[in-house]
Image (cartoon, rainbow, N blue to C red; front, side, top):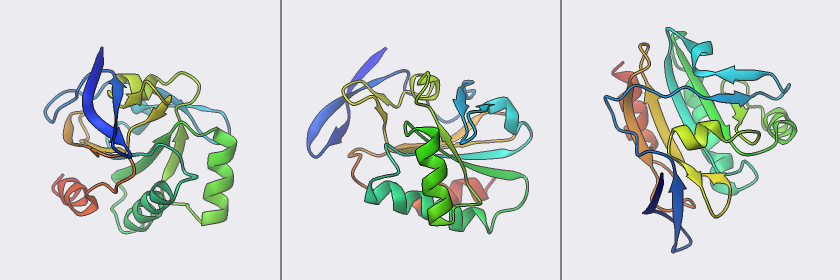
Length: 169
């Protein structure tokens, strides 16, 4: 399934691959990898509220700031919550970035191998093979409670709105 007209990059429209997920729907499974090339799936976080921050590439200023913001917020969250950042960056680049930036509260993960997260969550950009900037909040029962797909991938998400939605769970 391809969707046009949802996002742009510097004013140019892009095509998203995958469904348009909505609050109230069951969160689809996915398989990504961590910095040690180990597989990670949605099931690894059963029983926790999941805040998923999605970034095109950590080597861009907005993605850098987005990950740093969620790392700072994750430090204040109770233990029944987990913050993930998923991008198409290589696992080694993610590990290097997190080490140099002091990112230690967010689990930074890579979808580069299979793009299964991007396709399942409808945020895989066909033209760039990157992920669209977005946020998904998933409750302890794996039901999506909040979705934001940022209209222009060079813009920031609405951090306050996402964090407020997560705080209600």
